[in-house]
Structures are given as structure tokens and as C-alpha cells.
Amino acid sequence: MHDACCRQRGYTLVELLVALALVAVLATIALPAFGKLIGRTRAQVARSDLEFSLNQARHAAVSRGLHVVACPSGDFVDCASTTRWHAGWLTFADLDHDGRHDANEPVIATNQARDTGVGILATVGRLRINYRPDGSAAGTNVTLTVCDRAAGTKDASTIVVGPSGRVRHGQATPEAAASCIAAAN
Image (cartoon, rainbow, N blue to C red; front, side):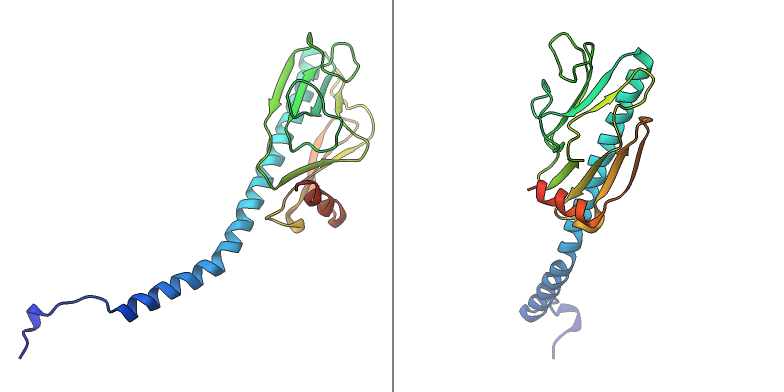
């Protein structure tokens, strides 16, 4: 007879393989949802950063009584001639009102490039946002669509800057979201 107190306890190889298979199945189910969550979060962070920068530009224009420009910029020295903002952006006081950053014009803020897969795409034809000393923005509404490839088109959002200079956000149209995701590649 065997003593119950001296009996060895443990897991059999079959039990360990079943547990490992169960973990693999659960991971396979959870990973796509986790990737989408990360993508949605990256897009929200990008939108928040851009909203903050635009509000900061408007505030600087009003408080300093200057024309202030926010524009896409990959090198943080000059404005890029593109509607793609995900390479980074530049905010500066436009002392000569030409919409271009010159060496004597102070930089108010810069913002670094977004993670791969994040896209920020402005309305066609709007390469910069010009704030006047009263806080208004020159031109008509400009819409910036913010998206992430991993999150998909359903989670894309927009930032709209109206002629008053006010920044608001909303849900992107399916067409704008698809264009944004194509630009994020």
C-alpha cells in the first residue's frame, strides 16, 4: 500500500498541453482586439496633441497680438507643402504675414511625428492654419482627419477649425477616414 502523505503531486504532460492550447486559443482571440485598442488610443493621443497645439496657437495669437501659423513640418524649421500632418507640425509667430517661417520669427511650439500607422490629413488645399491677433482663423473651415490603420475607418475622427478660430472635433466620414488611412501608409 502506498502512503497518502508520500504521494507525489504534479501535472501530467497531457494536462500541461491542454492548458497551453487553451492559452493559445485565448491569445488568438484577444490579440486583434488589443491591437485595435492600441490603434484607437494612438489616434486619440494624436488628435489631443493637435487640438492642444491649435488652441495654443490661437492663444498665442491673442495674447501676443500677432499672426500665428500652424503648419505640417517634418524638419520643424519650414512648413511642408502637404496636407499630411502626421510627420509633425510647427507653430510660429508670422511677423511678416507671408505664411512661411523665417529665421527671425520665433517658434512657439513643435510636435514630433506620429507613430507608424497614424495619419493626420487636412482638407485639400489647406496647407496651414493662420491665426489673426483677434483669434480668428483666416479662410474657411479646415478639417483635419485623424486615424490609425489598426483601429480602422470606424474610429477615425476629425478636428475642425472654423473662421472664428474655434477648434472642435467629431466623427470622420467614411470617405475621409479611408483617405486618411491610405495617407497613413
